[in-house]
Image (tube, rainbow, N blue to C red; front, side, top):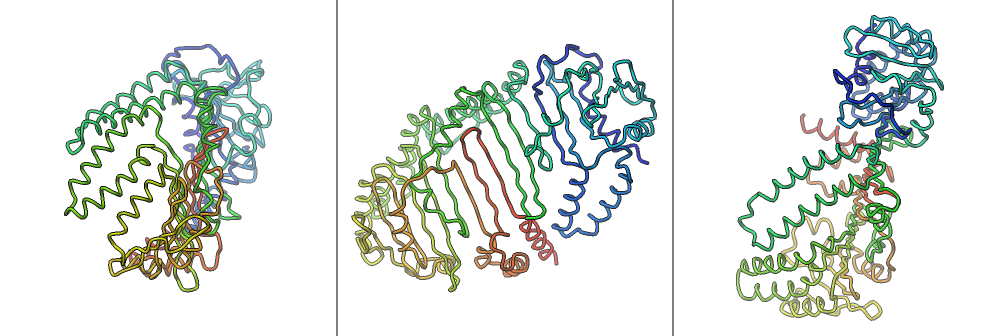
Length: 536
């Protein structure tokens, strides 16, 4: 049997060992700085075979699975329990290379496992009076130690003391239900040595400082000043993460039955810290536009963010210079006047540095057309509407002011003309575009049911929204593809599936800051088939 797989796994442990250990002291607490978790071998085998089928390599996946199965044998990989997850936990040392780690290997047969190690590493394991085994392997610079406990073999390199019975972490503490996924890694930022974090911050700050040195020949001094302040703010946020960060986890999950694949990143702050408070506030964001989106939309996007107070004071002058630059590019006086009115109405919103916006594309209908509804929170909405009315009055054939009404809100209609692009006509048809200003929100409706969608938006109440969300349903968007091959492949892959074509990316706050990418595995199949079709 090949010696490479088990040798490679054990080498990960020894890679942390320096020629001479800088610190031989055992960890002072049982909270590790790093935890790595892998699903059970049987589950990983199933995942690999499933993904092979998804990307159209079923035969290769089957061959790989058969190879792994032959290695496992009747007793697993010579004594390993292929039905239980695998884990690694460790502590980060002051100098990095003096870190300590423990590998948890699930055991089905102790004797078979000992035979496996002996055969693979060409060395004999000697059991000590403390029930800890020692192995001295010719190719490894340090000794290997392990002991059997809790249905696992606890394996480490160099630092035997971490295997003391009272120091062992229970498998449930390392491999807790719901935290393993297919693979996951957790870094407890508060357990990383301060000097190590300071060194990492210094490297990051040097890289960011280089951004401030880059020339901006087409920008004003105020715009450069804003850029530099934004870089400093980013540096401060990273410093806050290193200073007040708690657990940070990255986890990959795969549900073969439902065809769900997700990648989740979670960052928490120390309880009561400024970072934890900011993350909590992000989970309580009130949105004037979040209610616009519907569950079965073809495409929807939501964003609810704001600039830190430090940057807002610098944003005004930068925007004023940008306004001058835009007006200077006007083709004639009429265009300049229209731009000036529109900019005058939108500038208060831009200077407020708060973006609460939602876009929702619904359809296609039986006619193959879509409906678009969008909303954005604005500042001084009444002033913005007055400026819009002044600009629109110049184009009476294009814009019908006060064409509709919803309660006390006037709705303005923009009529389609020959300047509408063909892509827009294909998506929304020859239907008008409707605009309405309600207090501090600007709403837009377009397409087949644009007016109705706009009126529904005007009636919707504010609600808690996410920091960001983007979702698309590929099968619903397929009719818009220019390449007929893509549309045909979409029909083949998704058929009449109602949710097998979903991709979603979201960011939200609360107890932790959570970024989640979710997709149906049929999307992978779709991309793979499209790429193959292009090569034909």
